[in-house]
Structure formats: C-alpha cells, structure tokens
Length: 492
Image (cartoon, rainbow, N blue to C red; front, top):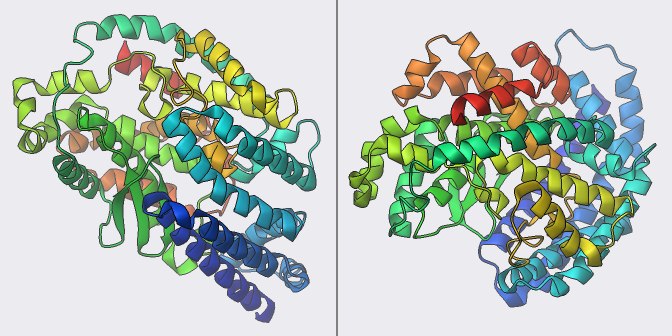
C-alpha cells in the first residue's frame, strides 16, 4: 500500500542518518582528536535535527492514520511496524527540534568533558555539563508528559511500560535479599587469595583470547569488530556492522574478557535482528532490559560458570602461560569471587544490583527535583556506604565512573537489573527446552543456546512489549526469584 511504503522509505532514511550518527559516535569514543570535539558535536547535532524533522513531519502522521485504518493479514509485519512508528511518532512530535539539537550538541561535548573529569577525578569540571543535561532531560520528560513521576517519562524511552514506583518496590524487595547473600558468599571466597591471578597479561594476548571466545559463542567478525575505549559499549550501526569495545588492564585479563563477553551478548542480539526489517520496529530491539539480558546471560551464566573454565582453560593457558600454575577450578573461583568494590562494570554478580539501586535512586531524585547536582557526590558516597559498606576514595571511583549521564541517558540504569532478572529466567527456559544443554555448554558448544535465543528473543524485534516477549519465551513475565535462586546456587 502506498502510504505504508512511504512510511518505510521515510523511516529507512531516518535509520540511515541515525546509523551515520552512530559511526560518528563510535569514532568519537575510539579515536577522535581532542581538538575535533566541538566540530563533531556540531555534526551530530545537525544529524539529530535531520532525523527529528524526517520522523515528525506532518505527512508521517497522515500516512500512519491511513495505515491504522487498514486490515492486515494475520501475522503480517505491517501492523508491527505501524504500531512501533505510531509510538515513536507520538513521542517525538512532542519534542521541539531545537531541544533535540541542543541535547545532541550537549551530549557530544559532555562525553569528552566527562572523560577528562573522570581521568582527573574532578567532579567540579563535569558539574556544569551535568546540570545542563539534567535540565534538558527534565524538559524532555515534561514534553513527553507524565502522571505521578517525571522520571517515568524517561524510563519509558528505554523500557516501554516501566514505572519508577513499581521498579522502586522491586528494588526494595531485591536489595535486602541480595545484601543477605554478600556475607556468606564473601566467606566462601576467602578460600582463595584476592589477588591469586594477578600477573602480567599483555594486551595482544588478551585481544587474541577475547576474539577466540567471542567467535566461539557466535559473534560474526565478518560483520563486527572489537576496539578499545574508556567505557566498554556495543553499537549496532546497521546490517553487517556491529562494533564492540572494551578496555584493558595488563594486570587482570578477566576485566577485558568479561567486558567482551558482555558486549558480545549485545552484539549477538544486534546480529540476530531481522536484516530485511533493518531500521523498522520489526527489526529493532524491544527494550534495554531485554538487550541487557543477552549481555548478562553470556557474561555471567556462560562465561562465569565452572563449565566455561573447564573447557577454555587450555586455550587460556596457551595465551597466558602463567595460568598453568592454577587449576581450572581456581581460575573459575577467582573469576566469580565476591567482594564489594567501587566500579560497577567490574562488580561481582552478587553485589552488582546494589550499584544499580544506587543509581536508580539518585537519578529519580535528580529528575524529580529532589536532589541538586552539586549534592550528587555527597549523596552518592553516603548511599554507597550504606549499600556496599565502602568509603568512596575519589570521584573517579564514585559518581564519575559511568558514561551514561554524559550521554544524557537518565532513566537507563534500572534496565541493567531487569536484564539480570530476565537472563536468569531465560536460561532456565532454555534448559527446559533443551535438556542436553548443560552437556553442550560444558563441551564449548553454544549453537543450540544461540539458536533458541535467536528464535525466542532476537528475531521478535518489537513485535510485542517486554512483558509479553518474556511470557512467550518463558511462560511468565519477569520474575525476580529465578535470579535469586541462581545466585544462591552459584555462590552459596
């Protein structure tokens, strides 16, 4: 139908521009010269403005109205795309073009300010940028509209249907349960020295091992690559182009390995989306809570298992000969060692969700106007002490450690814990669907697990919202007790 084809063509153009903006963003994070920051910010702001204009033009609304009055065949992709376009259109048309461009300009500049502030542990240098971004996010939320909590409007961007009251209640239940595991898990971890695997692991050897593992779990390097950055991330730039990044510590090969496994999980999702529907809702990820489930599943349920290290131990020793002095069991136990730490992306599985609870609480207070930006370090340090029992030594290991605020991604953090819950539930369902899966994973065969995820998660795109997708894949909407059962079994 003419109007539907017009919508496809329009949103294909918008997707191409977003992809181009994504390439510029990837380059900004991996190799942009410092003096090019201002120019790059202007480029990305311009592209953001073009995308907004294309996506919110009046004719788009007219075409959508006609398509919504059309009867489509059962199981057709057209109504999926029309529903997705309508949701996006209704939200984006509420934002003034000037706000979209200012937001893009501020984030492009802000990420470089943040990187330098983090390097020097200087919150004062980042504070003006964060104050502006909080204000812009508040403006966005007010344009979107909200009922009881302004923060809900921002959460909706990343996790359709999520509400801070419900998430807050979930965290209020989950937090104490997780905290109760820390003491016993730490006591069990005392059997091995904290620095057992400390040594010298050359970056080149880490890169070779990481690539070997990522390729084995299914990441297609003819359609992707790994690069180095300050903060690990994955970005899907289009069919056949998925970029992973990680960072390296020559004294700890596990940091980059688990960074790659995490980002490769995201990358496998992107590579599993429908290429024929690229740029359309049917070929797009449904939410960050589902996206995060894929990264946490491969990082923790696969990479953090005893079976993983029994299989990969010989190859690890090939790349890192000094590991030969340890057993596979010792390497596995060191990899899953529980001890509260300052950096979220390096946190163990037990304490990880406490990091997310902290950020969720602070973000909600910032957006709702209950916390001033100038008071963030004090609030962060106090709550961190309550949750994890540690005194934050500096801002780089405190409120400056994450890139998300410099990207303007407030409303994002709760999806990390939703990802943990979803990952545990999906693994349970995958084992139920494939009774021999445990034996396959122990042999380093990941084909059936990836195939099950492709069928039940990746290829679905945005055909339904996250709760329905989880219902279809596992028989239930997201439940916290499966994750708690997994943690207890693994660490106690």
